[in-house]
Length: 98
Image 1: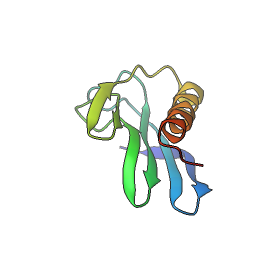
Image 2: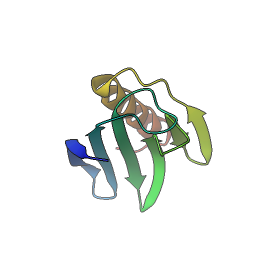
Image 3: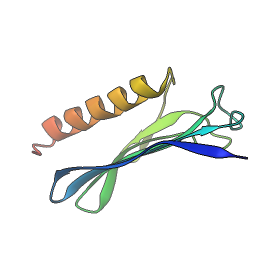
């Protein structure tokens, strides 16, 4: 399946806190998704992935907060990135980071 990169970015929030944003546009949707994007957005703090939004094949759209996995309603790339950044801000606030 041919994929075209949409976003491939690394955002440093602090020396030990980094976000990875990787989004591709596909020729056809993955199994479990109704849209043509494959994505993986992760927030890693002190070497531990504390937040992740992804849509691995067969599982569809979802996100992780620590060990919890929650459903996610994909409504477009801008909304996905905004939701991810909002969760980073919330996590940082709740955990006294930054």
